[in-house]
Amino acid sequence: MDGEDFAGKAAAEAKGLNPGLIVLLVVGLPLVVFLIANYVLYVYAQKNLPPRKKKPVSKKKLKREKLKQGVPVPGE
Image 1 (cartoon, rainbow, N blue to C red):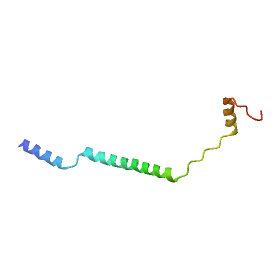
Image 2 (tube, rainbow, N blue to C red):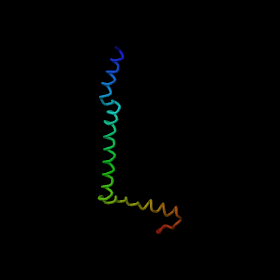
Image 3 (tube, rainbow, N blue to C red):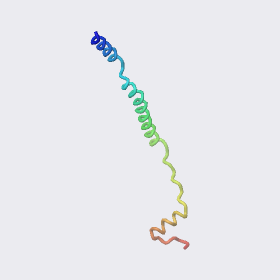
């Protein structure tokens, strides 16, 4: 009789969803949706937003770079 009881439980468990599959869906689907949404926003931003403006280089840094290259700085 124990054999029949075990077979009945196995059949009942097989009908339900695997708990591992549920966890995978609950974690995986939002992650996939998040990544796809990020990609879509990135592509949209590349097409529609103007490029970022660069910060102006200070005169001090400009002078230092020219000295490194060996170019004489005017005014010295």
